[in-house]
Length: 269
Image (tube, rainbow, N blue to C red; front, top):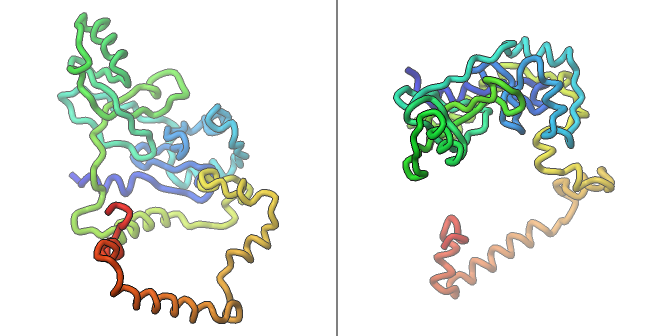
């Protein structure tokens, strides 16, 4: 059996066009996942998903040919696998990347799970004719495929607790990033596959388009451009002189100040 970190690294795959829509592919489920909503998006309901309330302020223009080609290229299946429902005496699956991880409760007598103690108390009373207190409820982590449809896809299912450290022992962060990049680069990025007019999830998060609205873009670019050799000719010498003078003053500093200067995170001292 492979360690969980290997599965975690290989669960998510990307495609240039899907990324422009805020979609990724969960390779375990072979289905699309919305990065914003953290739910699966069925093969035939992509258009409907982007018309839901969660996307009403972020209109998306779909190119159905590019979407279909991307799903074929990424081996996205037309159907979802059934939710992996388990009882407490059965091993729960590892969390599915791309789906929201929720804290909930599991029934000790059947496979039912819930998000609130009041729901679980009602379940025990209704299905098992048992009254139970909140302190006796069994907490667990749960996920669901989606919240937008009626039926089994909405069903909560229990998953294993998330790993505290997804990095393999002996593996550096750089090595982990290289492995993730290797997976991402399996599908070559072609510039003409991405609709440059789409607002990406990164842009929605940073809101840069709102910050720069109404300003001259060329002027903004010039303001943040790296200075040329002919600009600010005395800047380098002035900075070096500043550091030299500050270094000379260190002998007169108090011991507490020196300790703060020598601390990796002075704010926490």
